[in-house]
Length: 193
Image (cartoon, rainbow, N blue to C red; front, side, top):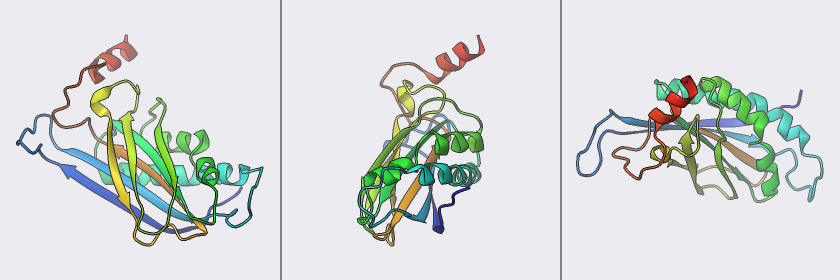
């Protein structure tokens, strides 16, 4: 089995206790992002057609980052997302390969068997770059109350020959969400009915 060599894991946690005007219904919003900084096996090689080595190796990364997210959020996971940054000696497709359904399935398993499409984003970058990891409800992407982000900035990554693979979760939707659309309760009732 292929392996992506991890240099470092960073876990970012934030907790919003109330909005700027002090609304706090529903309890704190905890968001967590776990990032693995890994060696890019194809950095500096130009166009590489077969990226299956990265795809296969991403399963272990998905499981580990999902576990780290679950531990850090210390609650039921309600929403999730993923993101990736590839260093400048790589190709953006390299980090796409690290975030396919192979990664996603292991991430889902680690946080409690969610089943909806996982929102994601990717970019090329250097140390100090910031990426906003999108979040959406884990059972249905159309639940607008859970559309959110968590920002991740890594001051020493990615180096030119590295990739950053990120999994992110939240324990609930946004504080004071009120833009309509399907509700979490409607989706859960449909699932149970």
